[in-house]
Amino acid sequence: MIKHLVSAEDLDRDILEKLFDTTDSIKNNPKEYGACLDGKIVATIFFEPSTRTRLSFEAAALRLGARLISTENARDNSSGTKGESLEDTVTILAGYADAIVMRHYEDDSAMRAAKASLVPVINAGSGRQEHPTQAILDLYTLRECKGTIDGVSVAIMGDLLHGRTTHSLIKLLARYKNTKVYGYSVKGLGLPEGYTRFLAKAGVEYIVCKSFDEIPCNVGAIYQTRVQRERLADKSMSIDEFRIDAKAMSRMSKNTIVMHPLPRVDEISVDVDSDDRSVFFRQAHNGMYTRMALLKMMIGE
Image (tube, rainbow, N blue to C red; front, side, top):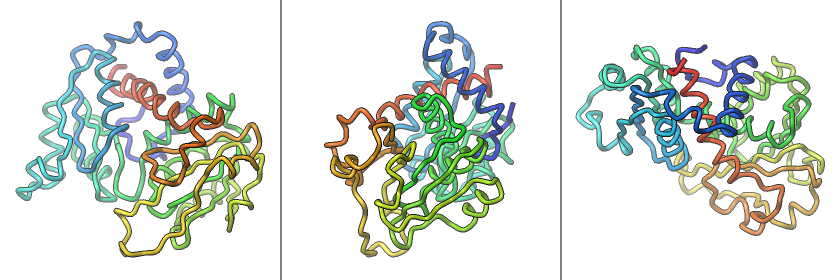
């Protein structure tokens, strides 16, 4: 098993399948896992805002019998405001806890934290780079809905430049056979070249779409994301964002599911919520179970 989870590249297919099987077991038999982290302490330290990731990790730890130490707004409420380095903060936390779950605004933060820590570090979002545990729950939901990931096609949409969830998802999709990715982005926010090269090297076909209509109507899943305006260099940038609504869904196959890492703003209309193909809330709830499986595998075995 991996010592730290910094990048989706730390997860091979065997680890993913074990994670998914463990998640299935936890969902079906939750009471059997209520004490598997008894005596363990999990530290959650978030330098950026979070609802789903932080709370689902904390719920996961508590449901496994662990205890928590937590800092929600570490950017303002930690010794970092006094000039303490990230490495020193992590070194101290490693003496208090059995695992550190961290979100940070700097791209290389997770890698630096892992190098400084004697206990497992789990990347809960690092700048514009990656969000591997989000990709785990995304892939698990995809498998749950489709029965398999091999051969699945996914259309990723929105802010592909700053979208760390899409960056990690792409890396995990590449672990499977005959997957295909369509990319439809807001102008100026396309997928970075490094990720297109990664897909090409892995043998995954990546097709750039210039409009929503270029996405095949029978695509397996649409993965919509919001524009991350907080990361834009030019805050006044005019953005013409495509919105998925009931009309847009009317051209898609009955088997095309709609996913979103959340939070959403205006990029998915609420009139899509009642569509059976919308799985983004199910996706978010799966996050607690996949993170239970991850914590169990990293510090409970």
